[in-house]
Image (cartoon, rainbow, N blue to C red):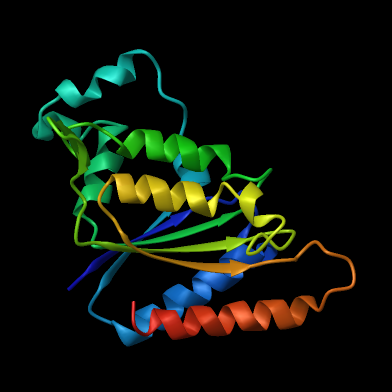
Length: 200
């Protein structure tokens, strides 16, 4: 049995988010295909994820027993213990919503999700897999906007730093472009989500 961590980073409510329309479809099909797996939904806005303080910079000194009950480190251990990750977020101002960056600051703790060695940092979350489901106002999948996209690229790079290299992206582009066929874009993304969910 695998444990799937479904990480949601969008302040829009369930019925008002195209991002969640796609990611929820992914989760639904995944559950149908893998009924024995555990899915943990983590809505970052409901969790109230905040910014690290000076004191929080020394969290790596806490023991695992102390950390699992700590208001920040509990997220680190939760991330470490999951087998698969599903991220859902819109592209905002060329990057991810700030709350998702804050969450990554929670889970990137030396000695837990990565470690320093004489050859540099090494991720401790190896052998896991992730999918990022994102929605974008323009087409950031190809030039000229592709070079400006720093949301999905950031997540992929950060997860690679932690050792998660099995990474796939599902992106619905051009959702804010006047005159495009929004329904067709969403149908394509939903079909892509359904297909990947069956083999994830």
